[in-house]
Length: 474
Image (cartoon, rainbow, N blue to C red; front, side, top):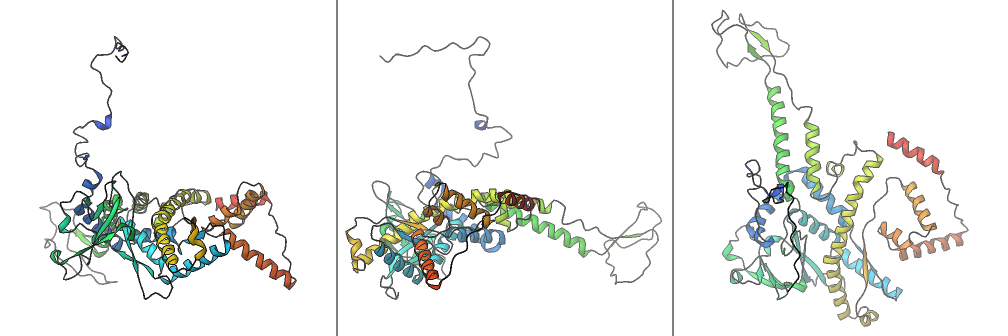
């Protein structure tokens, strides 16, 4: 028998029925209404098609009509994708690497890959997910006819013939291991004019030809919800507050004056018709009835707390996309050099995570299909013997606020062997081999022309510190 330990006796000073408990697990009169909507549904049960449709429509409406929402989505999309990811192969054949990289860059320009990726990132923020079908497009000028066709989230839906199938979850057909096996794509958008539910037909797309990009917030989640979902009520509050302030200011400005009297109700003031309207002209003197005074309505809007309240709401809105408030508002006037950099560090870290996810889920799938078609065309015969191609993706770098200070720090890191040229160039979104090759060509050409490079002048660190302190003080 398993040896059980003896139970300790409770101290005499404590009652025997005492149990430890969590305050947040208690339901009281004060918090009952707040926790009324909490449920224990699974990820797919909580994100039903109707729920996602409502959130998606409201998010699209807000992004289309709110300049802050539109600007935030555009900023995140532009910062994440930029001018498009660039391929670097890591095989042993440098010549073939350069040939493949150049050919892929030409194909990406031909199919407008960067713009499609930015659209997918915007759809991921607004719709919660982005879908792209790998198709064959014979009209492309590039030898590789692979193309990317973007579809909206509504078009991936369970057809009528598969509604009761347990292996189909909202348009996604799963295998025995729970992995996507196929996607059911509607031929027409259900919101198209003249297209009714009975007229929409679907086709089955293999999972190898479909790219599904979304952020899974819960285990077992198969579809995405808009990333700005937590901010939708805040956008509504911001809109209502702005309209209320504007309406109050307009009301105060529309009324020129009001007549009032200090006399009692049965006093000796001359009777005046209630709510009567008197038109007053500019620069005109007039007389008033006996016992009445002329008072102008004070314009007390916008209030002194309007700007602060608006900034706090925008700061809370930006948290769902991990965007700092100075990026949401496009205004860094309240930041100094140190706080601005500190706020951007977390934002840039989230962008690197997003770019890694983009490279893994989207770009690797695209490149695998691209290189497979290239192998069928016998374009790069040397690469066919490599069981798999190792590659990495470079995105646009971010400019430093103080380029001179960053260059000195970079030189110090290289001199102390705490970094590499590959890493430093990667931070700028560049391929170190291509940059060094270009630099060698420039130096060789300068040598042929008899030109010499001037030695770099290293600034005094004390002067740099003084300049930084002056900028912070300013």
